[in-house]
Length: 101
Image (cartoon, rainbow, N blue to C red; front, top):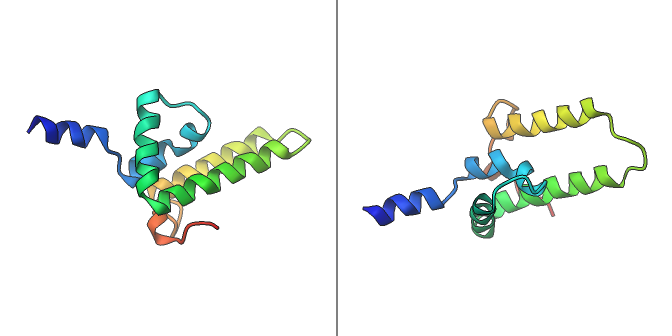
């Protein structure tokens, strides 16, 4: 029984991972959370696809020579969060879409 409780605490669902994915990419999660995210991403192709997509977006924003409007960044973050909460349309789950190439 104790092992089962430990296992449940040590694993993350797709929803759990997507809720912290942007913070993970930004290096804003604890070491423990990061390990759990990495473990999940290693086993879940759709979530790893979302990680790659978010990382590409972040890299693209970083490459822009001019400052990015903070309102636009906030809107992008809110949109991403709406996707993970199921309120942003048909892309509520990464399993509904093929992973990006």
